[in-house]
Image 1: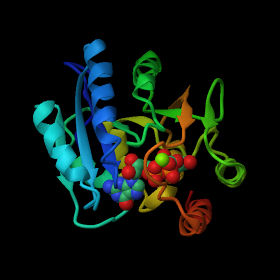
Image 2: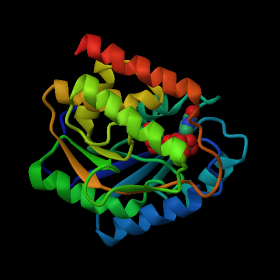
Image 3: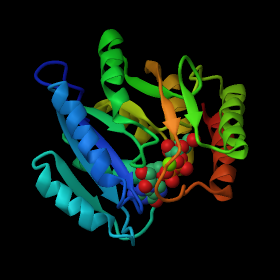
Image 4: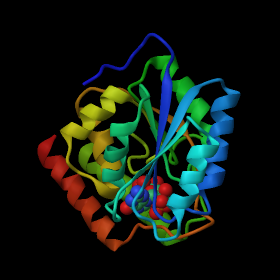
Length: 244
Ligand SMILES: Nc1nc2c(ncn2[C@@H]2O[C@H](COP(=O)(O)OP(=O)(O)O[C@H]3O[C@H](CO)[C@@H](O)[C@H](O)[C@@H]3O)[C@@H](O)[C@H]2O)c(=O)[nH]1
Ligand SMILES: [Mg+2]
């Protein structure tokens, strides 16, 4: 495992899993480029697409050329899930810091400079975007989805007490070697993985700081979260309760 470099120039790799994000991908890539360029930060984007039928890969291939050498496209043959998409993308990422986020603007790149500044301020292992502290919030979800998300956080916090206000959110900055270690430490993947990574990180003594974010529901396309994932999540919390 390569240790996170503390000398030399930092490189931030954004791992962006996509499934049917043809409409969102050009704009999110444009925003990422603008954000990093304005701050004079070295960056790359690793798009991990799972054979989206809507032509996401054709759009991604154009972006690879347009933003060369900053963007790479890594593909898998079928929809294999969000968690394993991050693990897959990490193999190709060159940065010593890894940012994971969604492609549908629920996670706005404007928060990235704040996350980077926060990480540097305390040399934190992880900085997580939080919808449930400070100025953070959720916009555009119906009451059922809001209650599901809040309930999922309260459930895991009650059972596992990790002291992180947004366990299920996935807009995060990790030191690369910390993320690699966490992937090796838990085999929980899917939507449950965000919670499992945060809980495992805390139990291993890694430091986690938070940056309030506004999470805005997607405009284009559909959420891939369903009832099956909610059951998986509850199982994941209990699995961690046994093992940590
Ligand atoms: N490669 C790949 N990408 C996927 C897959 N499933 C979803 N994605 C991508 O993963 C991102 C999140 O998927 P959404 O379907 O938009 O998730 P969501 O319902 O908005 O859920 C969000 O909030 C949850 C917490 O409330 C988070 O746990 C989750 O990670 C995500 O941020 C999007 O960029 C989407 O294209 C998959 O099987 N494979
Ligand atoms: Mg979404």
